Amino acid sequence: MRKPLVVGNWKLNGRLAENKNRILALAEAVKNITQVEVGLCLPYVYLFQAQQLLANTGMLWGAQNVSQFVQGAYTACISAEMLAEFGCHLVIVGHSERRHYTAENSQKAVIRIQRAVDAGITPIYCIGETQAEHAAGVAKKVIAAQLSALLGLDELSLQKIFALGLVVAYEPVWAIGTGQAAIPAFVQEMHVFIRRLLAQYDSHFAANVRIIYGGSVSLDNAQSLFAMPDVDGALVGRASLNVDTFAGICAIASQQAVVQSHV
Image (cartoon, rainbow, N blue to C red; front, side):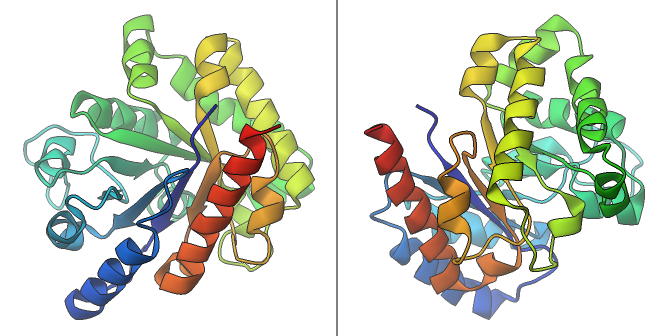
């Protein structure tokens, strides 16, 4: 059985003092949740703080992006090796906001995935269609293209990526930050489609890879989303800034994991 993963993406938010209070409160709130892995992805400048506060808590921490370069004259870039020095477990790659604001594409994202894996960091590869693509009925075509950039890698690279536990995050762009999450049945359909695409390369990996959902996840819709058999957790944006809300989402994921374990 795939262990659910719930990750908070703080995006461009945080201050040292409020971070400390929020992180410590969250660690306390989820300390007895053992059926789910819980993580936070913070701005680079707060990774050292996360490392200090989350050590020995069982929670994971990570970054929101990573450079495709290893070292050199690349001003403002942060390498995977640098993230590894902060003990990062996770890194988000290919988020739609990066694709939109900085024109990052799937090819660059895949290189970033490789860099993360080389440094021992688990990448969360974000894929998803825009509102226009969704309305045009080409969501699956878009997803297939985004995944093909990954599955087109050589055998050895893919084996390393799969061995480290790549996480795929389906994030329909039209649902991110809008308060309008995708209907659970549609999310399930897309997750099954993603799993089938992965199975064309490796059926064992496809059966075990965690495919999580992101896009206006809340206390109101978490249970219906996590009830879907192919939804293995969530990448939570705005709601992760509220300790009670985020801890509640994690608790719902844990409860649903227990239910599914008895099915």
